[in-house]
Length: 276
Picture 1 (cartoon, rainbow, N blue to C red):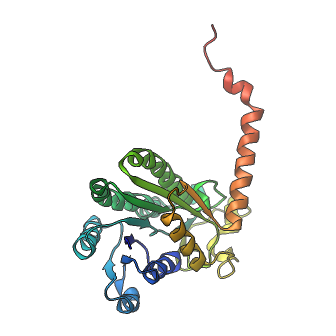
Picture 2 (cartoon, helix red, strand yellow):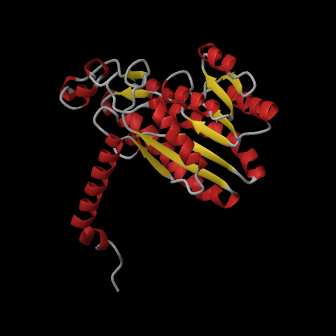
Picture 3 (cartoon, rainbow, N blue to C red):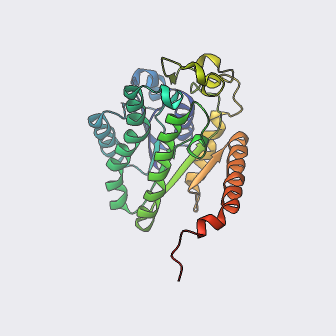
């Protein structure tokens, strides 16, 4: 059995994963900004669950959560950076303060947790870091530019990290879910306050008040949790794991489009080199 630290366990994928990990017999530090929402889960697994308050934007809370894992269970074998939320806005509409908080949670918060966990993993020569991104970390849509930017940043950092720590025995997995039946498109989704009319037919179509997918997403969080458990248990996990047939379709379409652009402009690409 191993010890997990999971951020963002209050609802959705994070909560489903916390339940799956504990049901599988692992130890787990399960976290939320309001730990009361996890009290029942902690009571159900008093020997193996540690409920800890954690807002990943708060460095002191990040340090404290890692210390709880060390003191209670001896260290962290698996980190899952799941905390995060969505934001819909045309690029021009984005409020700087809101965008700053989005990056503070979705990117810089995840980086801080990784930096606090990595020394222990390096010392033990083992560990797995699972960073929950999104299919939006591969390809963006109108109205999701800022959210996608946080996920592109997380994926870029994770890609580099995987190459830095693989020789040290630490693995990195980027999880790219499609639409799952969580609060992401409901309570957890924020948006710019002042829409611009010219974007009504692009970004505007995906604003929160126009969203029609909440509660009808194809993905099952419980099954996603089992998939993550399976990948972590694998001897050869992928760097990127797509979750959901919708994510698969979008990724495949993006790859086809990228290949077409490369092929169409290959002569221009090669034309920029010095000629002998």
